[in-house]
Length: 240
Image (tube, rainbow, N blue to C red; front, top):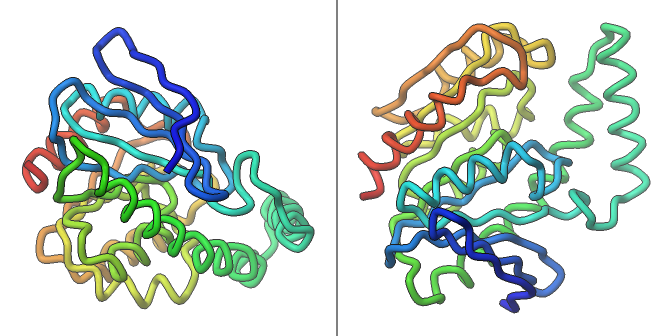
């Protein structure tokens, strides 16, 4: 892991950009160490520098967590395949037209998850070798399909917070039954891009004995800010 830049923020959080092979990432370290680690992912296709993710990461780090994010293959500034770009365009067109999108979604998201999980696990290996970073590990993010696969494949993840998405590939909907870590599931009741009933069915499918659903009125990007505070309290219970 090679750090390419660093910046000390006003609240004492150290923000550092890194490269791990071809994987670009950002690491936020709180003033007090060692600290539990939270892996923070955004929706597939959005960059790690997205303002909403950065704001969430800085807030979480200021609450005493080390936070890390990466750009998955085909996301952010990383090269995108022509096939994935065609699938994204077809998905946007079908959603605007009110046409079925399941098969297009499967062809786009399934491969992204398959490619992203090994890179996130490699990143986790490297992060846990750094001084001042300790377990246990949490996952927080809007890329629910990735979070499900990681929670199943990676035993070091002890708790997960998902921003609910109704469109999750079939493979991850089945894998949800194998997720047993404590879970916080955030649902925007009027999300125009994610069917509400599918999100509720996904919550029901999770195998976790401790799972909590928070539903708020509003569209896709309208998650209330207080949910970030509640999310940190969730991690306080299960990671500290």
